[in-house]
Amino acid sequence: MTVPHGRPVLPGADLAEEHQVLRATVRKFAQTEVAPRAAGIDREDEFPHDLYGKLADLGLLGLTTPEQYGGQGADEVSMCIALEELARASGTVANACLLAKLQSEFICRAGTEEQRNRYVPDIAAGRRICLIAVTEPDAGSDVAAISTRARREGDHWVLDGTKAFMTAGAVGDLAVVLASTDPAAGPKGLTAFLVPKSPDGDSTKGFVADHKEELLGMRGLATAGISLGGTVVHDDNVLGELGRGLTVALRSFSNGRIVIASLALGLAVGALDAAVGYVTQRQAFGQKVSDFQGVQFMLADARVAIEASRLLIHRAAALKDRGESFATEASEAKLFASDTAMRVATDALQLHGGYGYTKDAVVERIFRDAKLTQIYEGTNQIQRVIIARDLLKSAR
Image (cartoon, rainbow, N blue to C red; front, side, top):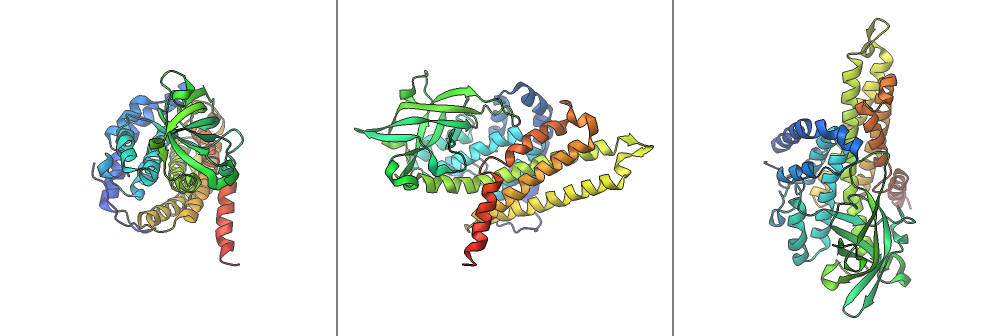
């Protein structure tokens, strides 16, 4: 698969030919391989290992990973395009793909060369599933409030704590764990660790997966809590500098907001696809449902919000590709695209009438999936705080 390499993309500009080829390639894969499986993945709530392997074969798990670590070396806009097309068919499959992207990027940015070579190629190839273990039962958006501790004992570290709602927590074999190495220092005492999964349930050898969560939507992601109890981690698995874990994690969240926004965009497109298909076929009062002006207004509003979301997303991605500041723009994209996904999914379900409220309707699944995009990677209330602070900063 041919991918773009570092070519700047301006918001509103036509996509490069390579981006168009990428979109067509991923769209075909999503339509032929993912869409037929989407309802079953949601119903059975099982991680789609076979599709995950196919994502790796297509180069999507390592799409933005540097070539020297087994990736494609594509730009951020490429990832946005790929995730939109995947999420158009299945939010779960898109989410699995973006997890690999974020963890590889985290390790590439904060890790040593030895750590990059040890872990990243396996993530890009689908041989290793990595998760980021930050959220705790009592610490979600307030990352600085985490209570997991790492204490020094001789030549190693010992970790104790519990993490909650870990995507792929039940199937992952490596976790980036944020823990406090200096509780007195507060946020400045957090450090990231690379922790493998325990091979036999002995928590001293690695993290142990707790029960798998039963989620409203995004089912099939094997979301679970993990436990650390006397878990021994050596210095070569410290990720980045001691006490710099929060800074690295916050950067990862900004990266994550771009790809979560892309996933939300794909869900919105999928909901609009379903709505248009339904109202152009359904008859009511002697005419097609699509002939009613009120229905047309709903479809038009959805179309405009989707296009605006895409522009916000591609702007944030382009800024990142150019090495410029993008945190606020990522929050704007995530906020707008996820609210759009929820609104479009809600309207699409409404347009389906009673059928939309059944498990047979695609929009019912999209409706449930869309809600999560307003919650994770920083709730939309947190995004509004970030955006407002940036706005007011220049007024002081």
